[in-house]
Length: 159
Image: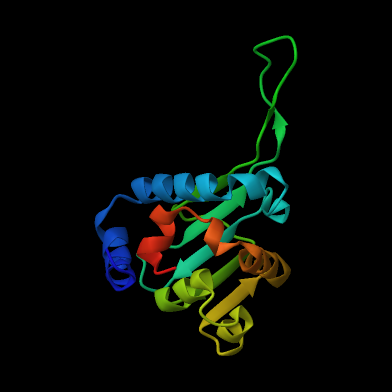
């Protein structure tokens, strides 16, 4: 499937698939891809806070938060620390910040097709709420090495 097909299919999928399924798929993909960064305390500022990714073509915004690293219930005599993960929700709820735009702008941000700041200066992507939180997530995305992403994710996105 080409990047163009993905760009056409994603909005349709959010209309047809149950939001809970989309939530689970997005959460699984993000946590798998970002596990090393999350273990290194990336996106710590999302802990206990919610950022909405509001793509105009999608049926609903996707809200993202981060769990803390906390001690898991001890099964053995020494408790293990569970790694932080991203929480993903497609339900309505409070958000501390949001990034709104069309799918092409979000895909351009992910692909690093252009300077990310340009997308915001041209108002193709708009931040609302706690802009410091939204900027920290945007800056994190700028640091992700696209070549380290799995091929199964890069190829359909045209990376």
